[in-house]
Every structure is written in structure tokens, then in C-alpha cells.
Image 1 (cartoon, rainbow, N blue to C red):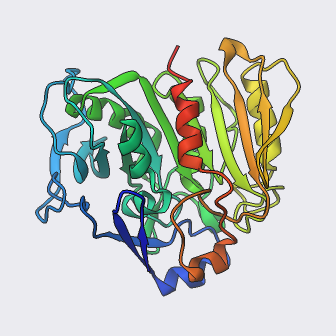
Image 2 (image 1 turned 90 degrees about the vertical axis):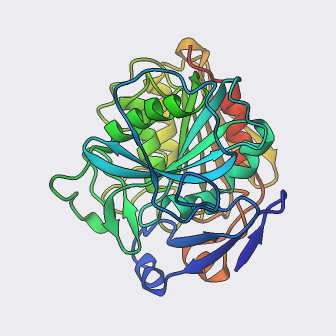
Length: 353
């Protein structure tokens, strides 16, 4: 199936039948292999459409800024040595990028069993990045799971209750170090670095809010909000989350897999308590079928926002249309709210204090 974005870019979707069988009983996450075929296809040589080996760059050492360095606009795949391991990340540079102007950075993490390329297509965030001039990076996990990979969320089992393999990479260290590495290559505003992700990637972004609050100004978990315990956040962290009431993988009311016990509303309450929010939750309906639960009066004037989408499954709200074969196992898709645009507006209002 091919999805066309508003800017004319196209993505083709191929669903691996082995993952289709797996997702019926577990959160195989996206289960997507996306092939870019538009005007700015993702290559592997550090330039759009490249076919060579991924470019390599040191992840540690220099703290120099990437401002003034020429880069190619569009998406490219790079390989970085971080923590003694080669890590893959797709970086999308917006069409209006200028190497002399600092821009925000958003890390966008794939779900369990998926890939960086799958998440780029699934979320459709490149379109928002081009429209609003920010860099979006899609890092890739390392723990094998079907045709994709899982994140090592500290103290949390993998899908189906599997234990994290011994010797697995420290993904909190990877993602935090990745920010510094990208700041060396691109002109990034370090006060406007954000994290989002889907499913397993959402749980990882929730963890980053606790473990790397000095790096990430705000986070936006999609279909996977958690409040890790213990949470050692050094400050109150703005949180915006999206979740469907018909999610069959990470149920809205909890009682799911071993990593998914309590409800999404409880996770929002826990974050409100974590952030010292003093006011009771307020609710509104920004659009039909969407309920916004908002906590304010928090330390540092931050907010905790939960968008509940009635009848939506395990999806990215407002994302590119999914194949029917995928919707049949992940649940209905909704366009009642644009997660990309909504979270970006929230991010813009939430720079690092």
C-alpha cells in the first residue's frame, strides 16, 4: 500500500506475515517495513537516496556546535558509535534548514518490533518538521524482535514478558548521548530538545522524562504513557500524551501485559503528582471524539495533558492511513486529532527553563 503525504512524498507499506501472526497475541509494535520512494528517500550514505554504507561519526568527545556546517536537507541514515556499539538513526533535516540558525530537535522512537524507518513512515512527522522547521531523528533499538527491534526500558520486561537479554545496550545512555552527537553535526537549539515515541517507544520517552530531564525539555508518549518508578527527574517535565480507548495492545484501562498494569488516566495522575500539580484535572473536548484531561498549577508552570481518543486502537492519531491488514489487529485508526501538530504546539510552548 502507498500513502501520499500533503507534500507529495510517498511511502509504501509492506507487512511481514510473521509479525502479523505475532501481533495477535503481543505488542509487536508497528510491525511495519517502510520503503521510502518519494522526492527525499531515506538513503544509507548520509545523503538522501544514498546506497553506500552508513556514515559514521564520533558520539563523544567534542562539544562543538554543528552550526555553520553544510548538510543535505531531507532524510538520511547515519551510523554512530555510542557506548561501544554501532547505532543507527535516521535524521530528517527540514526543507527550510539554514546551518546558521538553531532549530529544535525531536527524537521519535519506534514501537516494539519495529524500526527507525517504520516509525518515520508510521508517524508522518517529516511533514510537520518541514512545515515548522525542526529536525526529527528516528533512532533504532538493538534488541531483536521479529523483523524489528525492542527498546531496553530500565526494569521493564519486553513484550510477552520476555526478559531483557543480558548485556543489552543502555538505551537511556544511548538516546541522551545521541542528542549531544547530533548537536555536533547540526545547528540545534539545546534548550528545545524533545522526545516522543509510539508504544514501546512511548514507554521509553516516558523513561527519558525521569532519567534525562536535564536533556529533554518535554516528552510526548503516543499509545504508551507510563510514569516510571522510581522517577528521578531533576525538575518538573511537561508531558503530553495520546491514547485510544479501543487500544487492544496497551489497554486504556490497564490490565495488559507484564509491562502494562495500571491505566493511562492513572499514569497521567501520577505525572501530575510527580510535577507537583496543585489544581484538579480539567476536561474539555477540543474535537469530536477527543477528550483533553489537563493538569495545571504544576511546579515551573508546566502542564500534564492527556488526549483520549474515543474508539481509536493502537495507532498514531492523525498519522498516514494504515493498511487494513494492520488496522485489523491494532484496532481502528482516527483522524479526530493530529498528534504531530498538537504535540509540536505543546513543545513550542515548553522550552527548557
